[in-house]
Amino acid sequence: MLQINEILAKVVDSLDNNTLLLIMGDHGMTDNGDHGGDEPLEIDAALFMFAKKKLIFAEPPKSVSQVDIVPTISLLLDSPIPYSNIGILIDCTIMPEHRALAISSNVEQMMRYGRTIVAETQLPELDSLIRSFENNGNVENSIDYMHRLQELLRASWTEFNHSFMRIGFLSLLDTILAVYDSLCTGNISFASLIFRSGLFFIQTSIFLTGDEEHYVTILDFLLSFSLIIRLVRTARTLFSFTPTTWEIVVFCMIVAHALSFLSNSYIVFESSVIRFLTETLVAIAFFQSFSNRKHSNRHQSGSFLTIIENRFSWRRFFILITIILLLRLGIFFQKCREEQGDACEATVFSLPFSHILHSPMKIMRFMLGISIQIIAAFIARRLLQSYPSEIWTSTLIFPTAVASIASWLSLWLPENTVTRFARFSLITAQIVYGLSFINLLIICFRAARIGKFWNRTSCAISYLICISSVLFLILGDGLAFSFLSLIILIFLISFITVDEYYQIALLVFLSSHGFFALSHQPTFSSIPWQAAFVGIPGNFAIQIVPGAVIIAHIFASQIITSAALPMLVIQQNYQHSGHVGNINDI
Image 1 (spheres, rainbow, N blue to C red):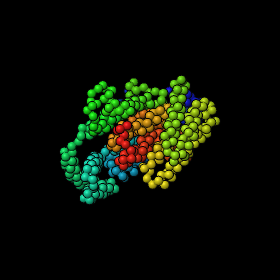
Image 2: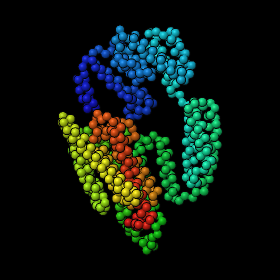
Image 3: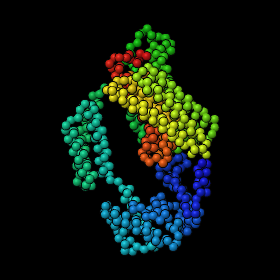
Image 4: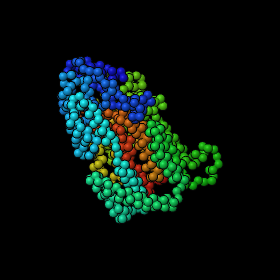
């Protein structure tokens, strides 16, 4: 708030006599952080208008609608009111001698738009209102007509087509059951293709012609008939299926995860639920990997530590503890939601660098980020030393890390020198992008010569390192430890289980966990807008580029887990071909 007040003070001081300052909120909020629209506090927001000239010429209303701001600003700027506007002029801001002309312009624009709506929707109430205005309209009753027109348009836009909603739900359910049936049988019948093609053409006809009267009944009958057949086949498949205990546990976890979306507590505390489910799945995969192993009776007796050593091996048990610990450490990097209130406390790692006051904690965070970047570069270099063919990738690792750290260092520049050294921050970040792009081209060239990318471990690791270098830069120093932890967790999956289904499930849960552990929340207020300026100037012409960088920051977890898939595929191929031993024996 102090920063916002300072910014507003500077803006007000710089205003001239012909400038209007307008500040408004998007929505309100309760004391608990709710802003869904159920209470007046959630839908009311502040509106601040300031000018050095006289701005208010009459008694202002206690409240105005957001849509009313559009025609008001348009007339104050002497520009045309947007064609589809349904807002009503805030007339207290208009000089008395211009009030009649402004109201006439506003009502004529709204009535012109209303005539278009009548031609498209055939609303009798709207048509009657417009005809009444044309016969009896004047400046005195124009505002009343605009209010009535606004209410009619709002009411018409909040009506839903229940027939289309029902057809959409039945179509979705039928499609899900059809996909499940095709997965169980292993093929898709020709009759099913014909049936679904017919449904598609009927639905398209309704959408294009808008004639739902003749087609909705047909669709209801066809979809209901198809659903009955699909449900019978699905029930027959489920009753003939004999799942194991582990499969039942995994199925229950999936169902619990799906049902949890119906709870508001899950939405608010989704990060904690995802972390718990990930830890649970790791434990299940760990113990399930030994369920089919045979153990000698000579080792059944002894201490608890002896049993752990004989059944699991100390290395595997230590890896399990490491994974659980790294998952728990993700708490320190999570961003708090407004609805969580006192149940969540933001740490110095989850805040943008510019929002942290200068303190020892800020210095500690930055030094930790640099240390993690150096450690990550060292590990990547050592990892690639076993592959002489990756000499180019290993050579570019340290220059990329140095450029990334240099870009972070620019954040420490004082505010009065930022503009002077702005190019330093841009150039260092662009060096990281350039080196990573060169590295990616080399990997693609080598992969094209090899033929099958998933048969070379070196290419898969180089590809993962290349993507990680860019994401390290974009995420910043505060999330470096959390991002490295996520990469380590991906590498440790293969030491927990060799079952490819468990590995894929763990990757999915890790990607969801990483989303929160990298300081994200599924709210608009938590979008990392600062990522748009990492190596990109603010006046960049191609807006899709900064947008892509923001998306890379938000979905960094999903990107890195997807980039790790070739490495897991290589491992599975080697195990199936017998080139390496079973990881369970490690």
